[in-house]
Length: 441
Image (cartoon, rainbow, N blue to C red):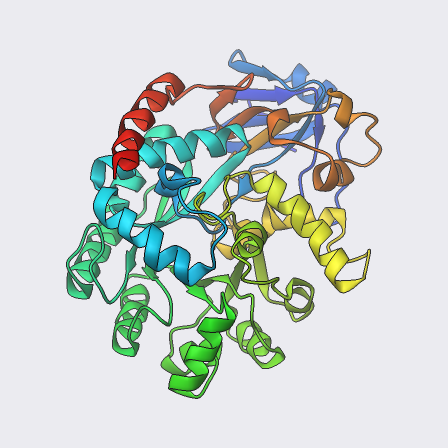
């Protein structure tokens, strides 16, 4: 533990979960922050004595933990929440979502929808989010203005999107995004071919080459439905995972969303190539896509984190709820009550999520030198009492409404359940205006 008179902020009074391997909770702990990074972690009685004249944040009665990490989403789809429900993925996309996007999702709508998504996630303890959508230069700006951490990627498909006429233009917009946010302290730009069934082999390879050239992550939907798997087997003679591996698209920089229908051979490929997987249990259940073999992937050493997907298919960005569902889901379907135990579930939404996004050297742990992305979650409500095991509480009992304070890079973005960088009333008015146009068709 290092002491310094130059600490900017001291968070104190709660039980600290550092998420360090083998660590025990620090009861009545404190955490010092300087220049956006964690400067010291330890018992409150020791750190308070060394506290500087800077700010103090009271977290008494809270669990103090790393911020939650959402590894897959489409942020501006908050504006399409509830627009089309109770449909299979292909019908949902082709007959409802894509037509609505073409008509309504312009730059201003994406800005408004992203602001709403940032507000929703910050209030729910999500400090790092992802986006795979359109106008992602705007998405990056919105997240940066809010002070939120994000991995953002302009989607590429073989047909027109709300922003681009075709793949060539999409590649140019992606390159501009990668250059614009290079070395940004909060925003990581990425490449995002939509899926193996909406992007040609040639364009998939171009995407992989661009990601490799500019050392960027590559996000893609993969093996989400039985229909997708059968289509690739019929047309390519191999599974979607094997097809992408054969093209050279998969690597340690790939984040594959869903991976619901993967065989043991597919899982071996994902593990061998160090591909990261984003598990989206709520979206997969709602669209009846299926249940990903998460225990098998984890047992094989696949990097895996949790994602909400977009709110048009979830219908929230409440990652804590999704993590709790995952913990129960895989126990039930596998008949094994030991599957996804509580601490592992908490790891999936924090440290493991950071690893999936390639950010695990910066966030995901409350460790000296790491960037101070922190959530203080109150444990005073009736549903939070008693508290024997904080990991059990987070995996089975906690609620997003319990989030009291949220910090990203040492900056307090939520204090006492109030947003500090986003005007919620203004966002409500903007959402009402945009969605009024969507209602009119």
